[in-house]
Length: 270
Image 1 (cartoon, rainbow, N blue to C red):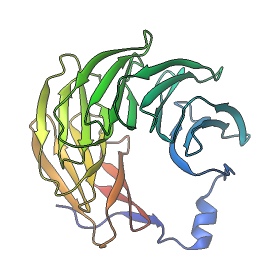
Image 2: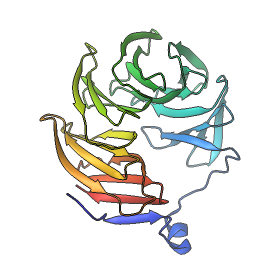
Image 3: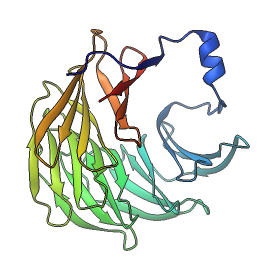
């Protein structure tokens, strides 16, 4: 059990600290729902509420592409590890795959019945997972642009999906308070991780593939040992407004970055 973060920033930082930490500021002039940085760190894809995506060069701070085609909010974006493709999930019920350099839409993936909340590429960039308010997770063949398998079992909205290193497993987070670990080949659910008391908003695998972090509106982050199916750590937010909206493992697999409703970003040592 871990009770205190190593670092707290954003809402708790002074203006001077924020100015020193800020590298650049992109004037998007639109409400931003999601961001994804390219594997080489040079570009960022931004999902917007105006139904579009924008791709920016972080060094020159210039917009390279405006990707148009969705008919409603873009809820999530992801960049393939080979840097070739960008995926977007939208409230228009579709997933789109874009060519990152050319800026054209490669395919539109249809199959979800409600808003698509999350998208995630496998490490080899050959498959794409999407999670939806229709309670389902779909796995798509990126090259063929077709569904490989649909994973069902959640009893409420799916908010987040993430691949385990190696691509054999996939994790999903839901409003049903659970995290599910799926076999991404057979579609069989291998584990149902129970413990959160409210909606699970975010999931992130450690690079070592052993641990999975999940964040919830119940103001906790739970760290699971997925090899053993056990709870390894429980991180409690102290503030009443500390509902957890997003979590991400640092590449060293020893720390987790947590974004929450108390306007803080915290780094936890787990």
